[in-house]
Amino acid sequence: MIKNPRLPVFVIFVVFIAFLLSVCDLFQTSLTAYLKEETGGGTLPAGGDESGNKDDGPWVYVAASSGDDAKTGWSAGEAVKTIGRALDIWESEGSAEAKIMLLEDITWTALGGGSTAGMLVFSSSPSFPPVIEIPPGITDVILNGGGKALNQDQPYRVLRIDCPGTTITLKNITVTGGRAGSGDGGGIRLDNGALVLAEGAGISYNEAARGGGVYINSGTFTMKSGTIRENTATSEGGGVFVGNTTSEFTMQAGTVSENRANSSTGKGGGICVGPGGTFTMEGGTVKGNVSDNDGGGVYVYGNAGNTGSALIRNGYIGVSGGGNKAKYGAGIYTAGYGNLTLGNSSENDPWPYVQYNIADNTGGGAVVHDTGGAAATMNFYNGTISNNNGATLGGGILLVTGALYMNGGKVTGNSAVTGPGITVQSHSTGSSSFYMGAYARVLDTANPVYLDYSAAGPRHIELGMFAGDLTGGIAKIALSTGYSAGVDKVLYGDLTYHDKFTVISSPSYTIDSSGFLQ
Image 1 (tube, rainbow, N blue to C red):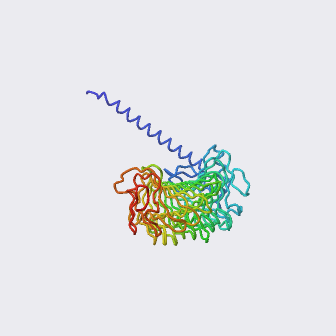
Image 2 (image 1 turned 90 degrees about the vertical axis):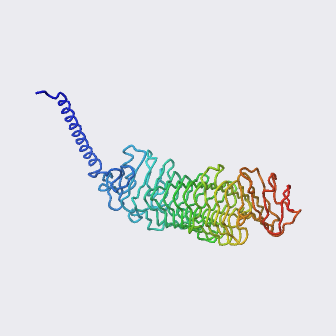
Image 3 (image 1 turned 60 degrees about the vertical axis):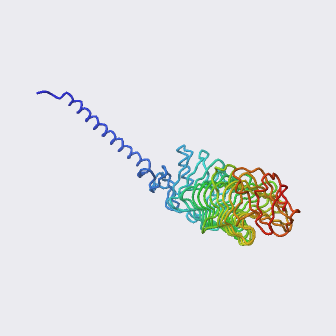
């Protein structure tokens, strides 16, 4: 009988594999026991927390009514009662990031009271007791509602944040019911630090004088997702007010919708940018907001020492069936010491849209209007202003007084009784200056450049250097009554391409090489 010399090798291999499997099973059993011990008897499901949330754990759980601060906090069954205790637990772990999961709504009643500064006040130097003090080692707080709410059931603000160097992130949570009365920030007031609105978060049904949803006094607010909707301001910024030399609002995604500035002097139904404030829109949608006066979607202004600035690089100011509305400047209103930039200097940048907005009086898409002799400026690099309705005057853009610099973009499909495209108005309160250059084109015959000749005399276009294909021309021009051939000059600056401008109104004029009507 001949023995198989390979058989012992095979047997050894099988035994070795069996040994490895037994070791892995022992390790898994030990790990499971460890997790149960560490979480107070619970276990974390694969890929998330006990609520099925897919964010990386672990979380410290808070139940405002049924929790107990003597418990561990590491599972739903071991939930603590207060956010302050949850922060202390994370500090004891030596973590700079505190991840907190709410199991119940938090209300003033459930808390047994709060501060008139806010139902909850996050602070690194408490001055409004009772407060939630941010421990020195904590730099990031992630508050995950798991679908629950910070629901103010008394006539005060919901949340106040005053913690330099700390970022508060709201996720899967609603901030609602805040009523700040004559104060600012019905939902949230940010006085210092950073606020982030993440997926599933919402700020809704809050009221204040300024910043019905959010008031940014100092610090940075970043909207990465979520919604700010149906908030009300009696003065400025139904959804958001940003206005101080150290206040910034960056909108990357999400929706600001159906907010209102509901007074006869109201400004910024959706967003109001005040003196020193900065608003940067990199994505998302501002739609369905209403101002009873100026700036349905966005209102921008400043003062002698501090310019208010808005940079709309991408996203939508208005959508079909969801345009913003106002008496003046339904989409965007730029007032004295305000600076608006639509698009950016690179032709390859994202493309913003200002569309489907409806003015009750004038300025469907955008209004530029100095106030009190203070400069107002709009820089138009790229983007589309379309399908807006300016009612009596200025369907696309209404330049009342101030400066409009157009270096690209499209103005098309807008409507108004007079000046459906771009209107350069002659106004008794000041002068208006319209500059065109680079890739600027206004070639929609139904949306021309309308030059007004009334209170302050004839208006004109200041020309810079142009680029790109000019075979189709640069602009169609319509003139009001009052202009005369050989008398009125309508083009100034670099007149190399004067012949690329066509007067389409009656009587028929041409423009000579000196910029005069002939």
